[in-house]
Image (cartoon, rainbow, N blue to C red; front, side, top):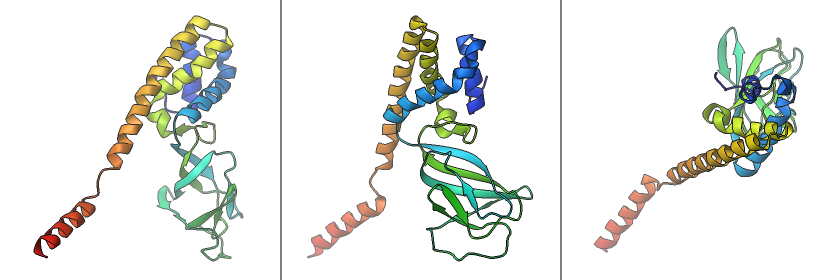
Length: 213
């Protein structure tokens, strides 16, 4: 089965443990597994679906573990539009309600330039800590590494039912998966730090100039 959402992960935990009686504790296993991931791996791209409130110019995002906002889109008549994220205080308030086009962050709220005239659906992407929930049901890491997420959770599930051999087996897989993922992340970072071709051309320009002097 696919494991790409919070709900699917909870179902997979019960399936892989072959224990229907632990389904009510699956959220705790995920939360404990994420505590380890937050210690070992940096922030992860997460997407959450938000709903605007009619007559309000703000949305409460306190339930999300946001480190840095990335993008915000709003859907109107089955068409998606990007909302411009601006520094707080950089745009004027509009007294006419309607479809928001600008937003800023103030504490744990997204503030729009106008009140919503209907309960618009928003797609919010942000860099955040590992914290799956019903409000943030998926993230980039779960999409790309469902095996690691599952192992990190079931380690705690096995400990919960006091199945130490199973806990040791899943812990071994977790350690192996973590090494692989951290290696891949480090490799991507090294690739991103490659020399800018523009800087290389500057160096060549300097050399040519010096040879003429």
